[in-house]
Length: 200
Image 1 (cartoon, rainbow, N blue to C red):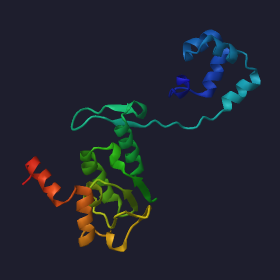
Image 2: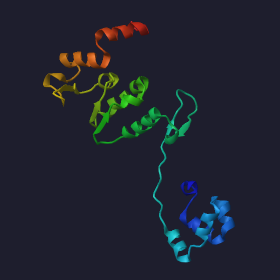
Image 3: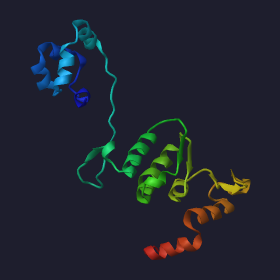
Image 4: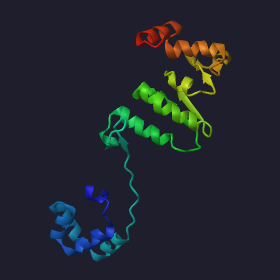
C-alpha cells in the first residue's frame, strides 16, 4: 500500500491506469498479480466512483536528529528511539495552543540537557498564554521553568494529598526546602554534585 501514500497518487490516475490494463498497473503501481486481477475486474461504475473518491490528507512526523550547525537529517517517527519519539511529540504539544497541557514525568524518556535547553525555554515563553501542569522529579522543569505554583504530593493512609503548607511558589521557604530535598536530593547532595562537576 506504499503507492497509496505516494505524493503523485490520485484515485482518478489509478482508475485511468486500470482502464489501460495489467501491464500499466504493474509498471506504474508495482502491484502483484492478485491485486491486478481484482482491479481489472472492477466494473465501469466502480471506476467512476473511484475517480470521484476524495482521500484524506496524511501526516508524517519526522525529527531532525542532528545537533549544532550540521546539515539537518530528518528521520520518520517510527525509526526513532523512544526518547526521540517523545521529543518529536512534545514539540507538537508545545506548539501555539491555548488549551491546558498536563504531562506526567516527561523526563522519563528525555535527557536533562534537552529539558534545560529546549523544553524549559519553550515553557517560559508559552506559559504567558497557556496553563501547564507537570508531575515531575526533574528540577529543571519547575525551577528553571519558573513555575508559578509547586505542589508536593504526600501519601497518608494510602491516599495522595497536597498539604496547604507544601504548596506555593519556589520562594516559599517550606516549598523551597521540599523541592531541594525531592528534586535535588537535598543541599548536601546538590553541593557534592556541584563540586564533582567543578562548578564553583
